[in-house]
Image (cartoon, rainbow, N blue to C red; front, top):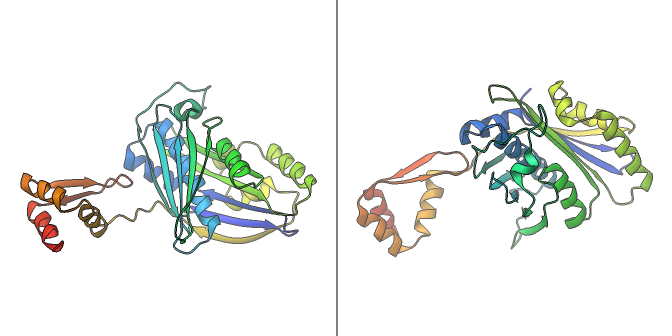
Length: 293
């Protein structure tokens, strides 16, 4: 089945959960950015998490930006999701290669680093976006997000993310889940969730076995009476366009556009999310200048 997000809630109203299958999203990102396995794993986790967060926000035309700057060799990792969960992103240094933590386990924490911050920007279609950040604690992304939700949003959260890369560097499986307590939940609920997480095991192994997002939720929360709320298809989607890039050029102002036109050479602008190359001829640049009046 194609990439999708499943949202669920316990019938007692104390717990909400969302899980994603994101193999297609992560493989598309790997192809666009020519990522080696380390970057694929880190960017893939970030894309999966951001997609879940965008879908959970449910603000029409809103968005969520997840930015991780850990000081490690990967540099900045950034993902942007719309309100459905369609997501795009990039990593500064996609060709980073480090030794495995142990056989079969990529050392994502060291590649991301811990000397920096995780930042979440929520566009709620209000005057100003909501911006919040925390210092990284491990660089493992899921652990840092769990800490973020507890510190910045005061929401007890369990987050698990996984990306499985094959020998030929393609993505075999990717996804994860976010489970959150709702207001009024008794303390014993936390113990039940923690026990379920422990019994379910590593999310990467569940993905490798082919469990769907719904099955992952049902496995982790098997001791709860669940209501599946919805299943939503998601994809890697960039919203760049010729018109948007032209508006960016116009925002540079008349003086800089005149300097560009004076060079009398084609101008190439490449989208950082999808690597589409937009070419502007000297004639088109002069037309943009004329449009300024």
